[in-house]
Amino acid sequence: MDETAKNRNTLDELCRDQQLAVLATNAGNAPYTSLVAFAATPDLHRFYFMTARNTRKWSYLASNHQVSLLIDNRHNTSDDFSQAAAATVLGSAAELHDQARKAALALFLEKHPGLTEFASAPDTALLQIQVDSIYLVTCFQNIIEYHWNRP
Image 1: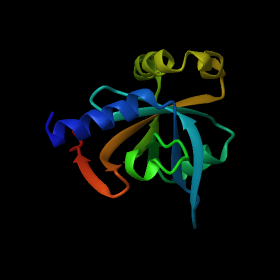
Image 2: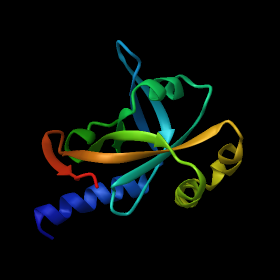
Image 3: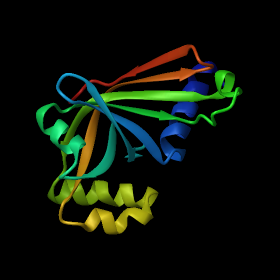
């Protein structure tokens, strides 16, 4: 497998296998981070997460839709310096409704069936991140950039 295919495989594995990511939003004068369950489309152009509408992250998203997700596979050991991988996803988040929500929710719940009850709560929003770019870091310093043009 060539290096380009190996890197894309690493990115696909991170997005498929990891359950949680760190969501960064803008709290006005500082970043704000939250742990979220996520799912991604196979092409990695869209990521999904849920939040209750009475949370800080919801209020921050209402004023600034630009977000970042950090997805990593660290084990918190010294091996992480040579073996861990991390992907930073940059994009814009928006709540989904109606048919778009239904299709995305099916994908999300396929990965997170334990969140079915939370997903059906009236105050829970399902958000989509439309990806602009992803930065994959491997071996603690090798950076690979992926960019998508928005339709």
